[in-house]
Image (cartoon, rainbow, N blue to C red):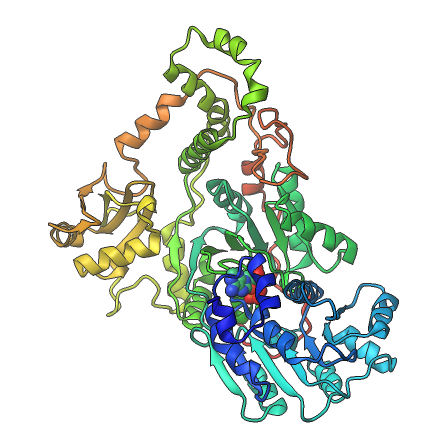
Length: 632
Ligand code: AMP
């Protein structure tokens, strides 16, 4: 039997959600639907975005309301217009086979008369943002006297945005006997207080630990010099050719600046912030949803409620002012059971904030190194190879040209042809990244900053300094496990420590490659690592550890060097400039062809890197209304 039927959901709805691909309930649905279906409890659900909470409250509402009647019976309050539209859309999808269900979305920035007209026509479920809802109530255009259920979705966000008073006023127009269901990603004291105020003995459900980030998110940070921030950011993006990311800035101006620079440098990016008109914002969001945009540069406020699946990376170009915003930001990735990475680009002075965040979300952040130019070139090359391998061939159309193509290539061996195809792009990457500087802040800077702040940082338990990554005190080791074995840096660190019993603190830079990886350990621990891995096998494969090349992270092993050299020289020159890739999978912005990209802004990276063109915003100019959140 369909598990949703077992939970008590009717066939009409189950058929509709099956079409949406809901085969099994998510954990929050499994636990909350039976409770909410009784209709007799107040309810507090502590759940991250992306856990399936819309259906967790939406399906029970569709079961509990009387759709023969046409007056408001349920009110769902949420913080943003985007979320409001999303919930409305989801409910309509679940109720696809129930024509008598009427849901209306009430939100600011759109025609109020349309919304009033829809309300007048008769509606059972109102999904609203607080400001516009209050406006409509004040016009006496809606009657909430028969509301049975109120849902407060993303309650922490609503309070964050200063909607407390509006919510009070709205709820005062609903009957005392109604049931209130509250969902929140985090549970700060303010949310606790409203739970207490509006509810009696609520049933509480916590998915995951309080305030803990989604387990599927890997948190990484890069330490760079402030002046190299933009160049470092681009390097990270270039190292992730398939990125589909949201980049968070602290202010509208910074957001706009970064987006403009990226566009100029040939990236597929756009800005989302409060100075844009609603229409402009909708347009940007549509392009992002359609994946015509690869990078969305956003402020915290503008990005609230963004519900886009498959976001691969969240990048904190600037750390948020409030720690809780970090949870909201990173929660935009790893939705619906997927995995994702949340990256923070910081300078040495901000290390303390990373430690604080680790404490708040209860998870370790992995320190990553800005990839070298060579790393990027290699990554881009193999992304291209992968793309060539997987490209869909239009047999019919290409057929007519094959004889001429074969004729053209007849002198060349298969290997020559492959080399030439790869070189088309590879030469350009090489050209762009030749002489690319190391963008990681020198280790000295970091230690000094930590010392100044009196933090333990990379120091050992008893105060002795641990060896510094990349220094002569470290040895670089090779291990024959990598990303194909589903290791990321964090996993590999854990795996090494578990098998060797060395402390994670004495492990330096970890470089996960495809079928192998490199990691640095303190010289004193090399023997322990070798012994620890003796006789260990991973899924039937013997684990092999070797001392790599000449030692430190700045030195590449011979093999890697040779590989790069093999492709260099000859062919078209890259012409310099930022990559102007067509990496998006959608149409829209995508440039035709792919071979014919114009390269904007010669020397893009270096131009930005040293320029210091990006002002160091102190965060004073913020979009948010002031509130009492925990700040760094
Ligand atoms: P939400 O937390 O409600 O925003 O849901 C996050 C995403 O998960 C949305 O894209 C939903 O369509 C999807 N989703 C919700 N429930 C399920 C389910 N039971 N099976 C598969 N996908 C789901």
